[in-house]
Amino acid sequence: MHEIGEPVNAGKISEVTGLDRKVVDKAFDALKKEGAIVSPVRCKWEPAK
Image (cartoon, rainbow, N blue to C red; front, side, top):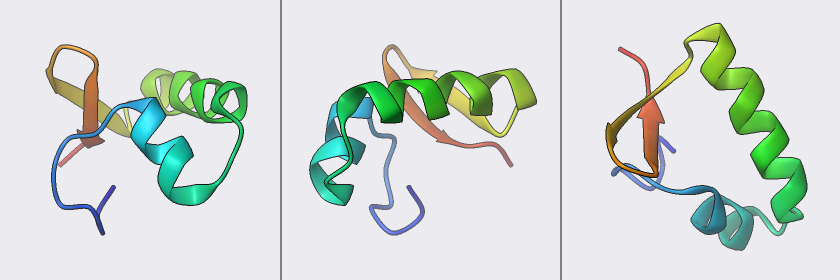
């Protein structure tokens, strides 16, 4: 997310990293629960500040 420089969705992360979308979705869920990522725009995520 830092390297892309803008809020992204799970599909973009999957595309950039080559990881399966289900793996990315699972990681996003864990990061949301920890408060490590926030959503400034619907369905887009960025690191929490």
